[in-house]
Length: 313
Image (tube, rainbow, N blue to C red):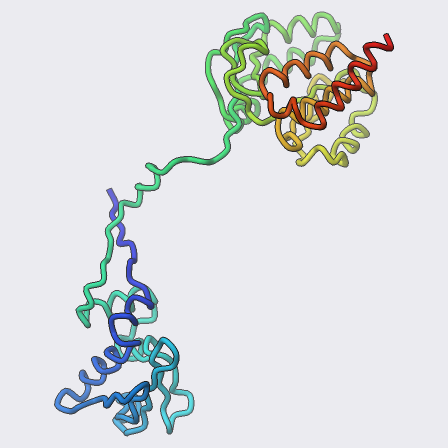
């Protein structure tokens, strides 16, 4: 176990215990002139005294400037600064932390130096956002997850060699139906949208704050990618061409919340594709899992569009 010394000592704390730093000047000067009175304090001025860094000449003027004592030499124009600069000359320490510790020790200020285990941070609450998703073993008919994974774990799995052989086998299949059957039976899968007790809308345990959209049977992938990247509702360039070759998968954070993102997607299905079934399922999903967003203005407008299109047949 590694123990670190955490600084409770500060310039302010030292100045408060040394009369703006005057006692530090007095301590240092007594090391050079132990048998004399080194300072005469009158108000905020200490007059002129001997400077051990200028051959002992009486050229050192010390004055309290605001909340800290400062000095200057009447002969050496470059010799000026505050009490901590003066202490550096004497102790020959340039590191700030070491200097403050040295002053605390030599002047017996008894300021606290707190010992801290460098691993204590592990006991603090972790507020880092993690995208958790459920991992399912093949075949796709299996609706019960085997474990919960984070996004970086999924990425590591995909980019490893675990699925390299079956991916090559899939790409070698020219028959569309056979390829679809092979993929459904051989590939494990994850639900980026969140964690599930069972792969079903009603068994969502926790939403991941991610929205995954799968576009299939597209003629121009690059054109769609460019459109999505320029879309105001896609905040990041987290778009990857679908390995199947005819689709594209886009994953992005919701606009204001996952619920709002689903509402916007429902409108897309209604207005661009006329797919009221999917739109209705999305809105029902929002009502169940995101009740606050279901009452939002975006949701109200989407439901109005849904009812109007449904009435129109």
